[in-house]
Image (cartoon, helix red, strand yellow):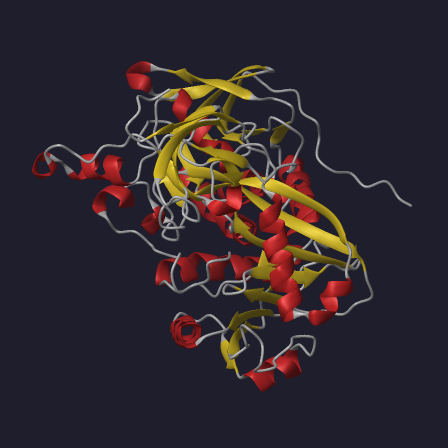
Length: 89
Length: 400
């Protein structure tokens, strides 16, 4: 089980969290201007690297707050976690 | 004992008509089908590890075709028909065992969606039956149908033609027959890049054993597809997750069918040797480490004990993980990549093993003709732009 450091609650067991996929995907600034291909990119296309990955986690059974993390997908090791309002690491 | 001849360990030539990246079940079935059905024998299968050592060696070998949507039912049913003739086709005993697959329903919603799936299956020519709890107990006496359970068994769907097969033998059989037809199988050759021609056309691969040119390059790399696609600047709607499975110690034969439960979330069968083989859902996070978190194992064991009280006595022998590439709609992508010379077969997620014969059959046709096989036309990459998704997350069965 992963030990995840919630930026508010500190290190907690993985079972308290829910995974939220890739972080820093902003809603389109001008949705009306998007083509079908742009929508496909926004909705469905995601990075899927082996190595450091910026992703979202939700402390659903704790403080119920979302936060971001950098985790190495080749080892599952967390490099950092940071609040939504903090600059990406 | 008599010596058995398997595939040749080929030295790669410099050029082929088709280069297949990935020597797992799908890659080998594709190579076999290219040679056998389309007469294209100038084919090289490159594999970064050893043959069929990835997900092909790690799955729980369940075979069924009772998917909800027409597009899925068509390809998985074609696959099941190919399974039914595979031992004759390849001349190898792959231990295909149509022992029946039960999908249990534990609440009213599941009962309704399961009955809907039975009707949909029948309309699509897929054998399907609805069993009452008493029918379930008669078919599989080991299942606890007591109404006092936390998740009582309210019924089940049964596909009698479904079952299991011996995964390794399937891969070895395809490899052996493809090799006999002239296909080169090159193990321990990791793809490190793609050779590009005019207009960005893909014309081959760079590997740890040198450059290998191919007029057509076909990916069959499951969980590693995104890494390969990134080498040509292609972004795909795939996420790679750990999927864990486990076996118990060896026991007397006690379970002679496959039992799946989405609600309690476990699927289980008993191998001929005696191990109880179990799997469940993916680990939620992306991961390439071929292992997952132990609480996922704990949850599926709890589910198994809930359904089969006798399993509480069983000893866990071994757990492991594979890397599965999952699409947002839980359906695969098969067809042209959008880059000349490059084809995709990926996104089979947790359900690729059962599709092995049909994936090879349809992917080979797509590669050979340059036009999508009718079986995979709906499973194009383009569907994420048109919106014509094939949502098999829903009523079909969460677990593949």
